[in-house]
Image (cartoon, rainbow, N blue to C red; front, side, top):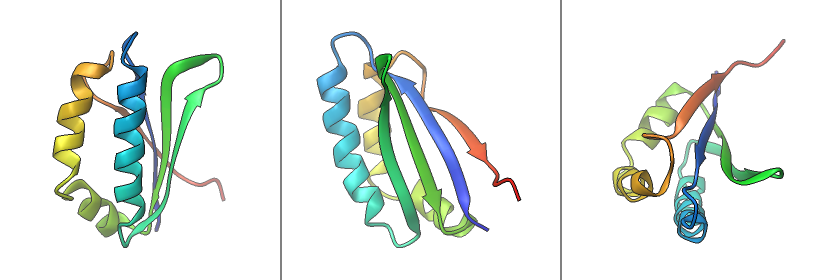
Amino acid sequence: MKKTLLAEFTARDGAQAEVARLILDYARKVREEDGNLAFDVYTKASHPRAYWIFEVYRDEDAFQAHLKAPYGGPFNAALAPLIEEDASVLTFLDPVT
C-alpha cells in the first residue's frame, strides 16, 4: 500500500529565500529515490511562509528507505533554525475508497 503524507512548516520571517532554496534542493534528491512517487512543494496562497509538502512513496519500505537517506539529516538540521515549528509537522493520509 502507498505511504502518503503531508509535511507542514512555516518559514521564519526573513528566512523564506533560504527555506525555498533548501526545500527545492531536497526535493530534487527525494524525487530521485526509487520508491518516491511524488514530492510536491507548495506554499499557502494566503500565507506564503507556510509550506505544505505532499509526499507519496511506493510502500512502507520505500518510506523507511527515504527516512534513512544520507541527505535527510543534514536537510532537517539546516531547516530547523529557519522554521517556526520544532520540526516539520507530519500528517499521514489514507485514501478514501
